[in-house]
Length: 178
Image 1 (cartoon, rainbow, N blue to C red):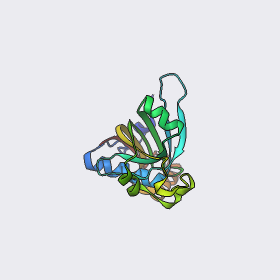
Image 2 (image 1 turned 180 degrees about the vertical axis):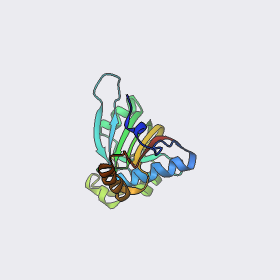
Image 3 (image 1 turned 90 degrees about the vertical axis):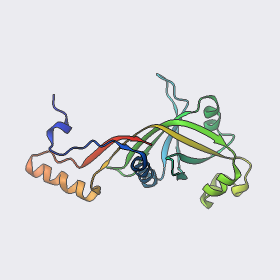
Image 4 (image 1 turned 135 degrees about the vertical axis):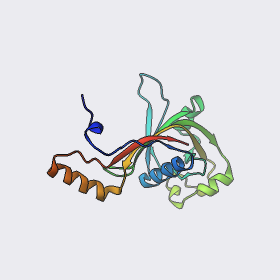
């Protein structure tokens, strides 16, 4: 059976490595603004999921979050540091799945670096709130799905595909090896 990828002339797979992978990871995380952060991942069982906002992607491709040190999420990470973050930047593009190992710290300088005043919603004591912790996710496997030329071009190709009867998918996907 032919897949949709075999019905088009364009190549829509591109694995990225190193700096190029980190740049794509950062682009997609920033576009999404929030993700579903999954912990307590066990084969065959439901995992814990909650929405979270990534504060930063650093030069090494690590993703940083602020979290409450008394949260269920932190308790789960302390028992099992493997997590998955699922990002969606728009309705039709900028999808990212990141699986990795997480580390929790209460590094005050990192909290200062990541602090955004909107975080006072959860930390009434501001950036000096004693409940703030930092979660660093070190990606071990990442996969992305996006458009090659942006949503406008992608939409035009979809419309042309309907009219011409040819598959003209502008999508691109692949591994991100950071």
